[in-house]
Image (tube, rainbow over all chains, first blue to last red):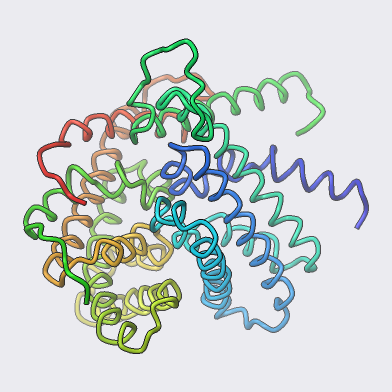
Length: 207
Length: 199
């Protein structure tokens, strides 16, 4: 694979077709784990791990899976990788595993993984699929980290659990409650839509 | 079997509709919640189908977890087994409805396969295990959560239908405004908190 192709794949997955902001996929976990930055980083790592390895496996097996039962086979492959991640997480970071609760298991039904499997892995060779999975996961993680940063900073006055509230402002409890997550995602989608629209109107370099 | 928390099943039922609503406070089932909520009738149909599948899968998963997986020590396989149970349940319900409830099947038919990958369904099975609910608590938790999901999507669809003709800034139309409406709804549901306490 050429260097230019890798870069194109990266830009497409992280910006042009960002799974969260452009495709509106994988929203559940995005909203649920972003009240604290640490949890978001772990969740992002989990998604990158699961989507990359699921894409690799599905792509490697793509010629052996009968078309009619491919959904169930894909789900089982994804579930196997998620179980592995869950076991590793429980063994190495039990506190975070408890804080994330059911949301690690819910990576199985995260539409991003199934989306990449259907749209990319089942018709591309393993190496490309692995990269595609990693980049799609990174696109999700970046959004996750931005939202978690804002919510943790304003909601608790901390970043990664370290107190940064030098100005002594009153923390906004609403930021760590569910409604703020919806508002922030809505506003982020709005901003990104506007940037894309402006680029297109100005005959921007990227379509 | 672990000791079930001493919460009245009725409290769990009401709490899962209002204070810990599946969509608005646990963020489960968002994908279809955002994409299938532009029309009230369709949204309500999906809500009913989710309610139906949710009640059956929580009951089946509870029975399988406590009477098969725990005795055999297969706890670590629960994600895999739950997702298979969910897929199988959806298939069986669909076949049953096709045979005996043809009218209902015509109405809900297209939504049923979609529900397999609705994370609210898997999420609720995982919640009941983590909170070690008893059978009766699980049953009412399933019914309540399904009703709560239905209520949320029907309300959102009704709001979106009302404002379909409004003019919005172009970037805000579609998903962005849907999130903001949902945020306002979630804000309203936060108002219920404190009435019942769960967890």
